[in-house]
Length: 322
Image (cartoon, rainbow, N blue to C red; front, side, top):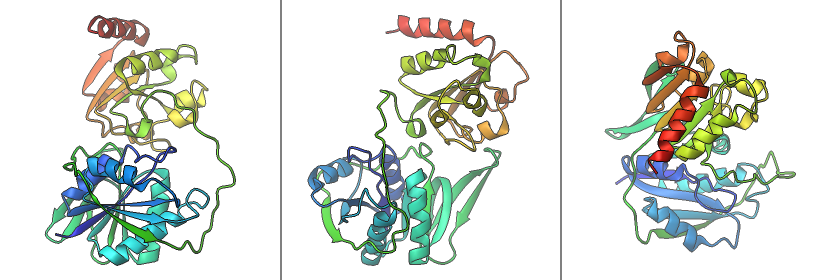
C-alpha cells in the first residue's frame, strides 16, 4: 500500500486541529494515512499520537524542532521534507488554512513537488491522485492531476465527509529535524479568547448576517440563532465594513471559505464574492425581504420575509423542542 502523508495543524493548546479528521479520512482512500506533526522538544507525544489514532492515523511521524512556535512555517516544512524522504509517499495532504497554505507552497519548492490548491475532494485514479476544485463561486467544478512530481494538495476545510477507522495504538516514529533558511519569526502573539462557539472555518453550522441587520445591536440576532444551533457566526463583507462584527467573521472570497452542513444567511443579498465563500455548503437557507436577492439562486430553502419576524419564531420553535 502506498503512503499518504497528512500534515497536522495544532491548536494553541497542542491538540490536533478540527481539520485533522477529514484529512485523515481523505488520506485513507489514497493509501496508508500517516500523520506528520512538528512539535517542540518535551511535548507529550503519547497523548498526541493517541488523539491522532482515534482520528484514523495508522502511523504518526513526530518531528522535534526547537524553533516550533518561534519560526513561521519552516519547522513544519522541514518535518514534512524529512518525512517525504523517509516514506516516499504518493501524496501529501494539508488543510487549506492560513498556516498550512504557507507550508504547502514552501514544501512544493523544497521537494520539487506540484501544488494543487483548495481541493474540495480527492480520489485515486490508478497510481495517481485526482483533486477536485470548486471555481468561480461554485459555478464550475474541475479536476486536476499531477503529471510530474509529488502531489501536494491543500484541502478546503469542511468539504470532505469521509472518516478513517480509528487505530487503537498507532506506531510512533520520531524525527529530529534541523530548521534552516528561516525567513520569518514570531515577534509576539496575542492569545485568542475562546468564544464558546465552533471555529468558523470548520463549523458544521454557520449562521451569517448581512447589512440587512441594520446595526451592531441588531446583529445580535445572528449570534442568538447561532448559539441555539450550536453553530459559528459569520458575516458578509458589507456587514463587516459597516462595523457590525469583527473582520474575522467575514465569509467570502476575501474572507473565510466555509463548507458546513448547514448555512443560514440572514439579511444577506448574495454578492458573488460572498457566494464564493459559502456555496459548497450542503444545505443553504436564506431569509431576505428582497425576493430577487441573488442569495436565493444558491439557497436550498428560501424565506422571503423580515428576519426580525422570522428568526424569533424560529428561536421559539427551537426552544420548544428542547
